[in-house]
Amino acid sequence: MAVSTSPTGMIYGKTFWLDSFALRQFDDISSASRIVYDKSEFLQKVHDAYEASGGKLADGYAPFCKHVFVENFCGVQSNALAITDANRHLWDYAWRTD
Image 1 (cartoon, one colour):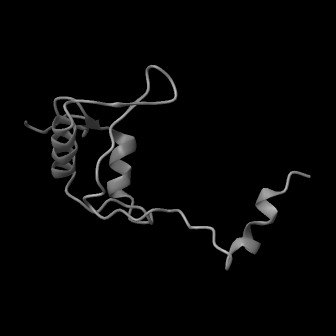
Image 2 (cartoon, helix red, strand yellow):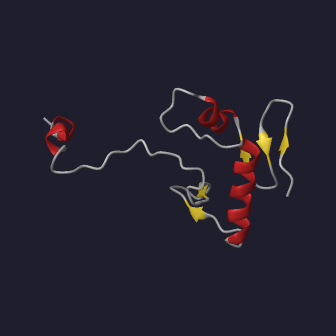
């Protein structure tokens, strides 16, 4: 499967593409969750995973919303923090409803 670039800079393949929103995840050097990976190779791996799954997408929150889940093959760090007994006190205010 070939990956191509449009005149507007969007990178696309047969089924999936990287639009301007997605491309920012690669280009924003200030982001803690920046994707440091070749964009075309990334898109090729997503297509390969999709094809290996038999072309199946997971249902999303609405009938028109679908998801493709892939292994974190490029080591992207999550911007999430586990809530533990050691940091639970820091979350107290966020959970208040009064």
